[in-house]
Amino acid sequence: MRSSIRCACLSLALLMLAGCDRIAPDKPDAPAAAVIEGADSMASRDPASGKVAEAGAPDSEPRPVMQAQVVLDRLGFSSGVIDGKANRSFANALEAFQQARGLPETGKLDVATAQALAPWSNIPATRVVTIPDDWAKITFAALPDDAAGKAKLSQLGYESMAEKLAERFHTTPEVLAALNPAARPTTTATASPAATPSATPAPAPAFAPGQQIRVPNIGADVIDPAEVKKPDWLVTLRSLGVGTSQPEVARIEVDESAGWLRAYDAADKLVAGFTVTTGSEHDPLPIGDWKVKGIAYNPPYVFNPDLFWDADESDTKQHLPPGPNSPVGVVWIDLSKEHYGIHGTPEPALIGHTESHGCVRLTNWDAARLALMVSGRTKVEFLK
Image (cartoon, rainbow, N blue to C red; front, side):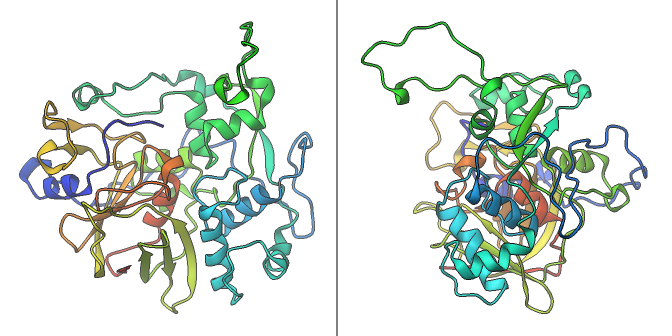
C-alpha cells in the first residue's frame, strides 16, 4: 500500500467533534443475514490434533520463522506482517507469547519457546489457495497521490490483486512474489554487466482469479456472520482474514519505547499482543490512563492541513472516503484522551518502523482484530 497523506490522528479526532465531520462510534444496524453470498473460500481448514494440515503442493523449502509467525498470529500474538524475518516485530510477538506462557521474555525462538509452540508444529508455514473466481469483478486502480484526487473517489480501495491478497494473508506483495516465483512476469530486458541484483527489483506478481498460489498459512479466520451487525464490516473482516471468535479485553497496555500493544482479559491474563507504531517528537504519545469511548468501522477521514506540522502549503482541507487505503485504515478505536485513537494503516510494512502523528497505528488486520476485542469498558494505559 502507499499513501502520500501521513496519518494525522489529531486531525481525525478534532474533526470528529465538528458537526457533520464527526465520526461517531457505530451503532448496530439490522443483523446481517445468516449466510452471506461470497463467503471466503480461502479460509483455513485446520487439521485435527496430531494430524498434518493439507497445504496443497509441498513447499520448496522449510520456513521456521514464518511457521512460528503463522502460529503466533493464530494465537493472537501478531508480528504484523508475516515475512519470515526474525526482526523486532517478531521479537515483540515472541515476548508476548512468552509472557502469556510464563516463560523468560527473551524475544527469541529459544528451546523453551519452541517447546511451548510444539503443539502447533503440524501447522505448515504456507499453504496453497485458489483465488476466487468472483474476484474478477473487482476493479483495481492506482490511487491519486494527493488528497484532492482521493477526495473525488467513492472508496480508497486496493490498488492491485497482489495488495488485496497480501492483506488477506497478513503479508506483503513482495513476500507473495517470493513465495510464487512462477507468478512473476518474465522480462526480455538484458541487464548491464555492471548491474547488481539490488538495482533490478523483481517484477510485481501477476495474480488472477482461478489461479493457485502459495500464501502464509494464517488461521483464526472463521467468521460467524450472526456476530457481525454491519454488512460492510463483515466484508472487511473477510477481506482481512479476521475471524469473529476473539477474547474480550478488559485493559490494554501500549509501550511507546518497545513499540508493542498488549491486551489482557478480566482475569488480567495476556490474551493478545501486536506490534504498533506510536507517536513522534512532534506528536508524542500521551502517557497515562485512558479508556475506549467507541469504535468507528470503515470510517471516512477529513484531512485538515492546518493540523499537520509537516503539511505542504498547497494542501487544502479534504473529505476522504473510507477504505483499506485510508490514512486511518479500516477502523478507528476512539479514546477518552481527546483527539487520540487506535487505528489501521494503508502501509502495513511500515508498522513498527516509522513514527505516527501521535496515535497508535496497527496493520489493518490487527486493528480489526483488536476492534472485536474491546468495548466501552476497556481501559487503556500508555507507557513510556
